[in-house]
Image (cartoon, rainbow, N blue to C red; front, top):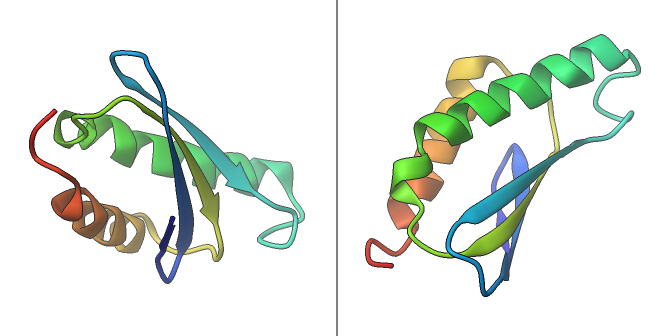
Length: 88
């Protein structure tokens, strides 16, 4: 489990060869589905760009705590990517 200012991240090890992600944005963040979907798309884009840094098989659940700009999300997730194990 990882607790970041904008995210709460849980990792569940699996026997597969790669990782899967689920992004959760509750109605507490924004009542409008379009805004919640925008946040999900932003986070998914950052995950796709940083996928090369994830070298383990796991199911990753990312719960968004607060709505922020793309660059702020990216900065936080890149710091998390840097802390991940570098070897498979």
